Image (cartoon, rainbow, N blue to C red; front, side, top):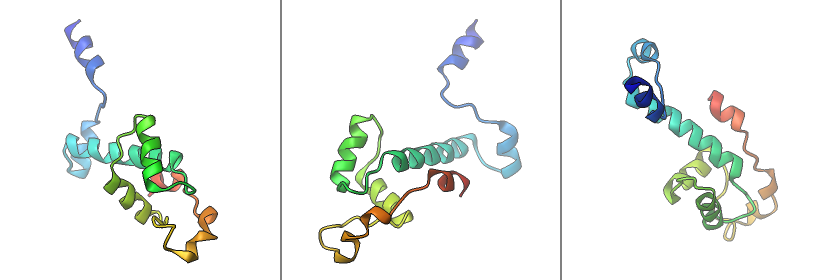
Length: 107
């Protein structure tokens, strides 16, 4: 009964063979997976027609823990412009920036 209660509290179960194979700690693997999941969630809910501030408030309403610097980093990695007001070249092409969550998981 005690073992069952302990496993119910866990959020992540890491395969120790994976850690041994790639010479990684369980904490490192957990953080890598959490990062990929977080990036996928950002991609699902990010709206290119909104500002970064509006997107941050959307993420907060969805209980996603995404900071301003993480959102800037995510936009840079996915070639999404962050300053729409001062950049005339992206004003007409904002709809062309699409995020593909499948490629984020594979890459």
